[in-house]
Length: 272
Image (cartoon, rainbow, N blue to C red; front, side, top):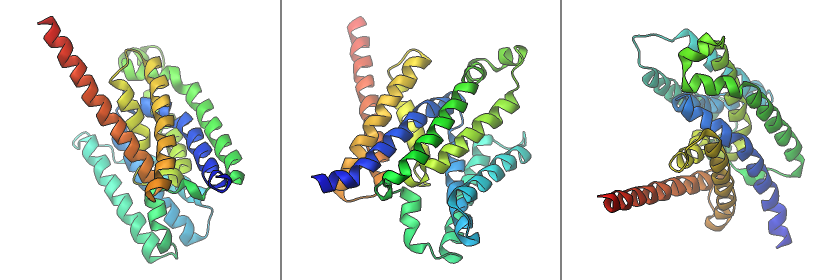
């Protein structure tokens, strides 16, 4: 049992720390309708890893450079003639293809492709936790700083403009925090599943809440539950940890959705 805990405990704690940032950030992603952007940025982390391996740089620098390029690129290619969701879908699939191509053809990381795609928290040890905790604390501090302006923009952008809030600046701030989260979450759930870790807890919480505060709290509980069950489930099923975590979160979402529909239909029948 002690041997198992020595392997699982760092992964479990790391996932729980990461959930502290993913829950409120995921709520903002839904409120700001930026799920497609989060997906594109998450896919871009794979290209960042590939470029870092190719140029023999630290992985974080490669991810950061690609994230900055994605943010600036989306600002430059913004065009009223093109639907935003379609542009983001094209960017996401292009980044994924470029990342896989670079990783498999120009580096010696072919054996680690599954880990980069689906994550592997079990590779973390105790020495990795301080840096992860520090990164999450910085992210939470920045998120707390921009939170009031982000809420106002999400609820009524015209009124927020009147109050002196700059939507473009706030969007860039939010994109920057999101890019940082993608960088630190890469090892946990991988490039393909980062958006799932962000969106699913918030989406599940949205079915049961009536206020933003409730949504953040419940999404945090769901994220922690998903990480706990996912880490232990990955050991039991012998699958990638990221895959297990996001699968648990997806199951929780569909169960909550079905239960809410059953309760709503019973309430409607009782009234009529």
